[in-house]
Structures are given as C-alpha cells and as structure tokens.
Image (cartoon, rainbow, N blue to C red; front, top):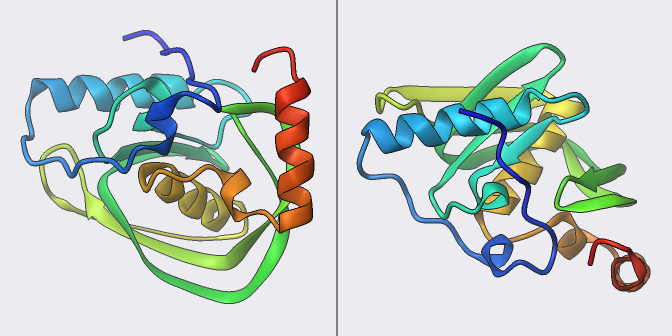
Length: 163
C-alpha cells in the first residue's frame, strides 16, 4: 500500500479518541501496512491512525532504525524527569515548540495477530511513544504546551499557508 496523506491540525479526526481494535482481520493488516509505509519516509518518527484518517487505536514508528507498530497501545509507565523537549508534528507542519515529556516511557499493546507487544524507550523513543499515544487519545502536542507557547503556536497555525 502507498503512503497515505497526513491529516492536518483542524481536521476533526485528530481530536477523536480512538476505538480499541477488536477484530484482527485483513483490514487491520492493511491499516498496519499503510501506517508502516507512511512512517518509513525520511524525518518521520511515528504516525498514528488518526493522522491518516482512521479512528482505530494503532500507531507505527521508525526511531533510530527501529521500525514497528502497536495495536491498542496504552502508556503504562513513564519515568525520569519531565522535561520540555523541542517537538513537532506531521499534522502541524513547520512548527516546533518545547513540549513537556517524560525521559522514559513504556507502551503495552498487541500486534496484528493479537499477541502481546511491549515497547520501551528513552529519549526520542520515549518522546515518540508519548506523542503517538496522545494522538490516539485525541490530543495533539499543542495541547501539552504551556499557555504562552500554546497561544503563540495557535497564532502561527492560523497564519500558516496550510491551515
């Protein structure tokens, strides 16, 4: 399957809390393949199902050479310090803001065959895990910003040529 277009901030699907996957069939395999294809592109750490228009609870990632996906992911553990890290998003192109994220994170879920999956990360991997689970919970990183950064970000979005 080809890479799918990324939905942009303002699209209601990005504010949708996703539905858990309960049927593990050909359609799920196609969604996983589309997510992996969409994530493989240069400069992409992860893509959540909502970013390609699906409300199923799935994301794919490509961080430091590791390519994978998680179905029904839940952020089950965070650790270290919560720090503001420069963050951007494919759904909010061209904008980067300091976003509070934990230094480590653990996500549990399953694969497309309903077998258990655990992904642990620190640094960029931890940031991506938190970012993609947020997408599946109906949040974009702008929702995590300090009030002053959020105001500046929303102003920049309104002034962007893509909004």
